[in-house]
Image (cartoon, rainbow, N blue to C red; front, side):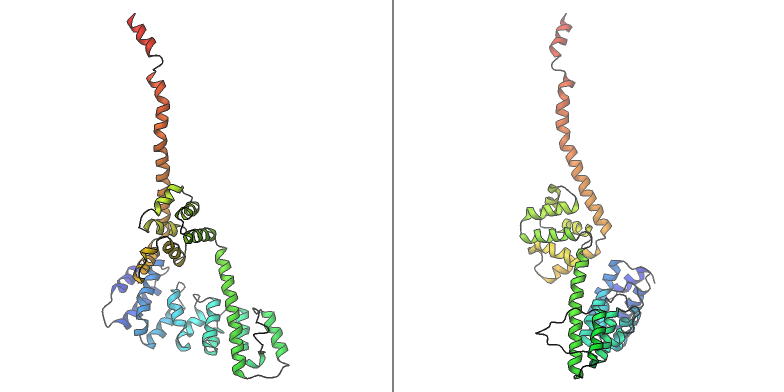
Length: 344
């Protein structure tokens, strides 16, 4: 199927067709070689509201189909991974849309059934593999007093050393050991979240986002406009015009040109225009508009603002130049001499 076929399926919302529409939309999406961000968003918008209305068989079918899809929608995949393991297994074993942090969170919430499916993944993080083995063999997991010694983020070497040490200790109840393993997984997940946040902040443009966010939250328009001018490399007067009226469309394009994520762009916009988002539908409309705006279009718009500012600067400089040229063109200084010679 082509992308146009997928869009046609997404439009069909006849009542009583949830089951068929759910399967057909995912099938059409999986046939796309390289789906656009818009098509990924369309699939999520279509399937997630139908999720609770479809059968277990349809969820199992969709999970299997998306497990082989390179560009699977993250929100739909996460929703399917929360299902029982007989539905989620293909995604837990194969999907690239599930990160290490997602896997750890799933193990912490669902325990051994999900852990055993995750253990079958290729190139599984060694630390996760060791922790799954510890969860399956609770006698090798040593109980700690969390108040005296909070668990440190585990590494492969630490897990192996503890396993060797724990083999000489007395056995403990499986329930206590399993809970201890889950606690260690949650600790690792928190550490992973911090590392992920540091990685995101290391991306180009993260400094601009922080400045825009902090200045927007001050409530001082001039501070935010200055940060916006720096981020877009435009003059201050242009940045001021972008936020001068109660229409966030110019700011939306500006933030999209910086390639900010939807949640970051929305945080900045709602800080600048708090009165424009009185209800959830207004937020949904903003996110849809931001998602559908292609970054190249936003970059063209920013270039247009720069060209317009340059053109305005040239126009404002033109009268001054013409005033400088006027004395030599009119030759007022020589006029009396010329008139005298003409009377001779």
